[in-house]
Picture (cartoon, rainbow, N blue to C red):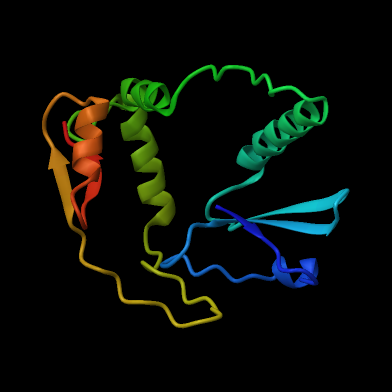
Length: 166
């Protein structure tokens, strides 16, 4: 959701916003207007929601959209090469399932089990606020053909996490 900055708001102060991930999305957009001809768009992204690999295409798409709108036309975006579902299907083909992992998945699991053996479950690192106790997990398996309507129905169940069960 785009927020309009109050007149006189400080951009420097806005970039120091601390996200409360339990109460708000990890992306904040604020439009600052210094005059009718000068605007600054702030996109503040929590590190949990983006990295260099994801912010680069975001910046490219914003530049494409801005350039097109300044020229008075709609942006022409390059169609995506694939969707997330395609990526997930490829990974399942490559790694198998938890019940039937491929040799590659077995080798990777063995590597990480050995590399992480003996390490604590949680590192005691300094934090800026106390952590919350973990809520109980309440996943709801959807055991039918995986279709968009089915996903929407499952996602609509209150308090549920949608995951695919094989």
